[in-house]
Length: 324
Ligand SMILES: Cc1cc2nc3c(=O)[nH]c(=O)nc-3n(C[C@H](O)[C@H](O)[C@H](O)COP(=O)(O)O)c2cc1C
Image (cartoon, rainbow, N blue to C red; front, side, top):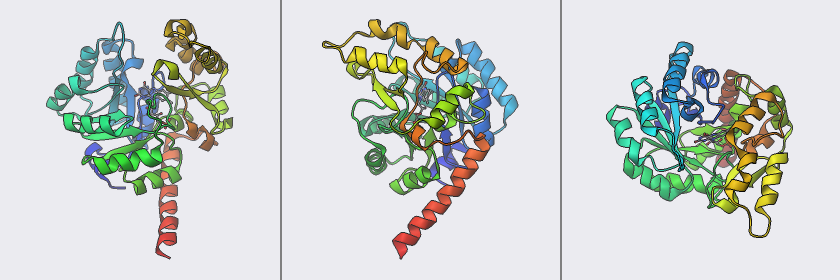
């Protein structure tokens, strides 16, 4: 496949594995890169910038293909040492970075000066335009279907992707709700030049997630996710388990609740433990609506190849319909 995204990233297929807290480690990212896509390590999954440098070196032993690092910039009372993570990424020789969460403006100059390619992930056309203006190479745009943070505007991919493709000059990557070759074919037709997937890559052999969680996601339907933190204006789409239901009910109380009240339920360490142990109701599990499209646990190689083949078939079928 050839798009501006494959050219900029130097990959065979325009398929990116987005940054995923607790999941984006060397085993998964390198499996995606070796399958011809772009694997992405998640910087903040590593406790310190030094640990990140070690993880990048470990990944380098496992692939010589292009590899990226996600840096999620979140407002925090006590922020992680972002500048040190930036330096760890640059000095490790990684050539591609995915920024997300907040404007990459503060770090983009440093990344660009060091010759990195920057993909910025956002959820609105206005943020995409400002990222383009700030000099990023690619914008990845997440619709309402996505796992994690879809923003507060509630625009689904079917509108958001063509809206972004029409507004931007740089290439866009469609993210959220894609789990098969049909999705890849659809977004290419909508004007995207690549895809970014999170949930689908969680349900692969190489994802560092307990089999019971993977099996629960296979069994789940497209109705089995829910939006939490909506009342706190920090909406997140997650798998509907006991904890997510409890958070929803606390947020639904008259007057709502504060983050402090739900913090013990949603702390990252609990989510991480649930992913590792398979105790699916014990922590927040981030997942998108495309769990309804996931029926098996393939290797990343099998998944990518199957998606590419299916995409070509779907586009040929669509063309036959259109040209008839
Ligand atoms: C388990 C999990 C953890 C995630 N953590 C992050 C993160 O730390 N930073 C980030 O930018 N996106 C994160 N995401 C979002 C993905 O990178 C991607 O944008 C999203 O999953 C796309 O939607 P999809 O799941 O429908 O493919 C996460 C997604 C999942 C499933």
